[in-house]
Figure (cartoon, rainbow over the protein chains, first blue to last red):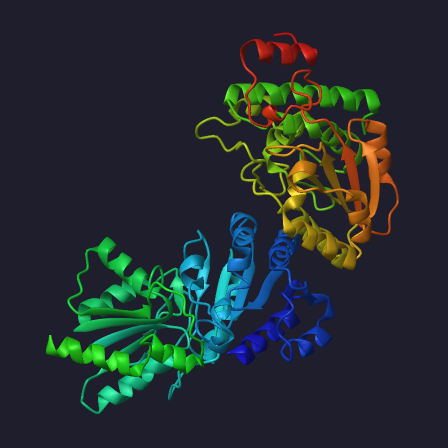
Length: 306
Length: 270
């Protein structure tokens, strides 16, 4: 997804000299070409995320379109109050990019597990929260965020859904169907969509048809689409590489309660309320937290038995 | 541009407004406001380029109050300088008002940045200064910080950033009244040797009497190739006899006889 992100950043920087990329001293091997080509639009602020958002705010107040970049929790939690008071309250075009969503940096330990970012960023008024699941989504989200008023949060990770065809329309705030199916809907956000796609292939052999929907935009949520899916399917599962509190599954529960929509068969898959002191690859930690295609298959089969 | 006598009169009026606002609103931080009023009077009365009828004039000098709790002083200064009607000040700290205790930009012409949590002003001012350099603009950026606020690490990130990027269009003014929330700065988390620290961070450091308008004005207007920081030695509660150097007036609201005494000290009839 980082390549897709860079493709869009190059395009945006070329088109508008007010577009600037700020990094908190991360992006080795990624930003060199950008820096060379657009030296006045690139800034390594050092390992100082609070200052990065403050500087971004000052630049944005003067009319710049800003992207800030770092990994894991550094660009969000480390400077959360600066994001809230400076960037958000002043309604600035500052787009925060975190690479390494979920357990992407699983082996590096708890500090690098970005599992609460989506829930926390979603709680901030006015923030657009996007967690793409394919390169195309990442590429188009980057462009759209640059044009959108207010603060954006773009969470990317190393994994992505492998799709036979990734040409479906993309628009922030509009859910996107990745695999068409009729029986059950799997709502997913982020690269972990690859597990949902795998599950759909497994269940297809048993003639169970899964509809896989990318909720790439957690805020604003595509409420109408989600409600229609819930009403028209036999059951719904949400899967996210982050804590269950406040994330995708929570959002769906909230909207159902608010809209009076009842779901007979519903399961939220995500990280329960703890920090992982165990380390390992992204795949290992997903498996450890029951976030994989097998878990989806198991839950669908439970729906059927039920 | 106002002369010395006129900026002193501006400061006196701002002090009177601020004490009245805090009295009416039942709010706090009057000591912190009075500490910086002379700085505000010199900036708005003598130094800064702005158009009160066109607050967003692109070539204006920018001002950020990082110690947002002294917001009453900024509102009063803006009112005296034509950005707001004086009667608007009566809304300070009232139910449903936009004139919050900590300075807010929403709907208030002339305020560049809402603050309230400490350690936010200098990073944002640095971003504004960098933008001006990039865009080859000649305006300047001023930020007033408290000394206690320097406990916040984000300031030191910004001190490094501004000198690294040679932001000579940026001036930070530290309100060095030596008192913070509970005790003196030196008893809480010692700042000294502050001057040496700031020099070592690559700033041009000037120390002045923060209530002497000529000293403030000369320091602010002196040439510099580096970002400039003015350590303005001030007295918390300056101008009201019983508030001077008293931490209690970080919190207390002047009312009754004390309010009358404050007005008397400031040469205002009650």
